[in-house]
Amino acid sequence: MSRDAGQAFPLYITAVAALLFLALAFFVVGRAGAAKNATQTAADAAALAAAQDFRDQLRTGFLAAASGPGGDWAGWLAGRGADRDRACRAAAAYAEANGAQPAITCEEGDAPGSFHVSVTSARTVGASVVPGTEDRHAKATAEAVVAPRCVPRAADGRTLSCDDETVVVDPRRPEAVVTAADLFTVRLTE
Image (cartoon, rainbow, N blue to C red; front, side, top):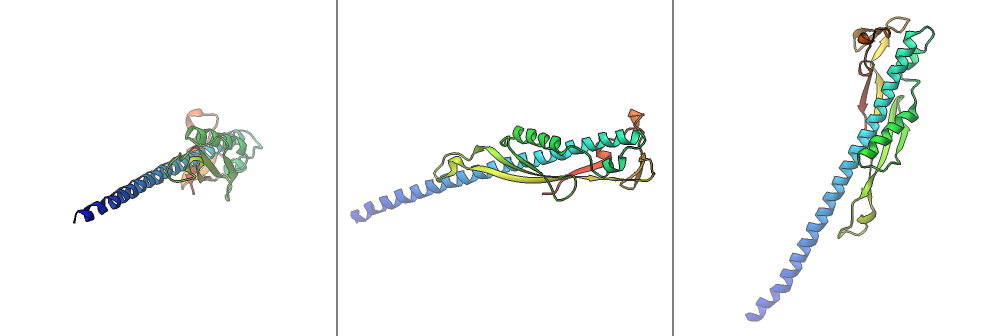
């Protein structure tokens, strides 16, 4: 009987080692999940930053065109004319501020006024018991779109129908000027 008691000790050590390895592996999976979530946050913030910068440019261009004769206010109101590169620079700044590498991909999405952003985490998952994690970076994508909320009700571009509400734009009266959010909506689509 005393010989049987000594045989359980190696099994006990093996079971404890296996459980310790599993605990460390689950820890790595948790770190990888946290890295992926942080990178997705950076991608979402970057896509929204690009779309909001684009929206602000559209508002400024629309108000300038509507204040004078012969301006292409309809193009601005439809989402055309803003500088996409400037919007993508805003996306890069937000991605970097949220822990992504400064080199991101910012492309025109499927719809006009949409931005598809891909980012890579600046930090790796880190060294662990799982081989290959020390140089793995999380990747994420997001897409945001700027959509017009208004259609013209008059030929001069100053009377608009915005979400079934009449809005009169008078660029000469700053207190009556509409905001970018009044004219365009920004939302994540992916």
